[in-house]
Length: 411
Image 1 (spheres, rainbow, N blue to C red):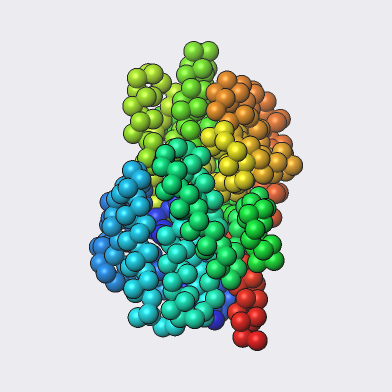
Image 2 (image 1 turned 60 degrees about the vertical axis):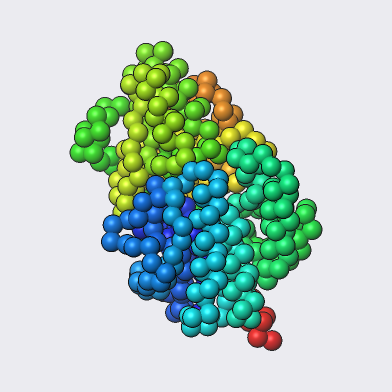
């Protein structure tokens, strides 16, 4: 079977969509299938091309057996709605134009969160007369409403009509949470074509590790209790809450606790500026690192921080960084309501606090720092629970759904 996968992000980019797509595609190749990924030149999140790449109409490479076709896109940093929309739309157009010049696939999979990529998937499916799978990683444009990035209701309503059109036209929808499946079902999408394949972690890369003391020393955080946020610094993450918790810790004289931010995003510059004005000596900001170095930085953490805005939409999501932290055996301080909070509590892998409540985060940081027995229990539970979210196994689940669809189409 030849699978064509359309995605706006792919390695060497290191965000969640890039990792999930690559790790699934790699497993499908191992299973004996041909996989072609169509994407753009790597530039996320800074809008600067990665070393060794150019923004060309067509360039090809092979990564771990996966055929990668990179098309020209309008490149911009991950900030500003208009420019990002031009980025998304340019990939949609380029992918649609390029697809007929490739060997015909048996199926096309296109991933959200934004729907321009999935719209390209629909166009490619119609051109080639092949099944179309919509991989649903985020409810977009509902997430735009949640963070207030667009105020124009007519535009948002139009995008929502387009979203529903694509759900109806998709031959299959693969959602990453059960809450997404319920949301679509409540909006009239037939349940029998919606399947859930959750996020997970590559257990061959994310494993329990002792702290990298050389790196900790270089960063000046040796002999500290380190809690870290690793990932995109975006509007949805409301990371001012973490800075406010850092301020409370500093006022309480808890200089034994250090907060580490690793990554980039639309909010990072503002966060750094605010931390400077607050004179927070207990906060360290780091730039994104390469995919192979990410576990090394995870090893620095005594606790991971996961946080999203306190809004109803985010009760439906499960941040993928949760599974990477679990695989590393790192207890989580979890500021997200809903399905992911229930997972954390049921597996007993961390402490849940109310989103956007800096005092609650501060209290839980101190609690985890002071209670070694609690940390050991959470660490043990995290490691044992991670096996249920092995990316290789989840890739197999998704492949089974795809094969079912192609078999049904042959009948």
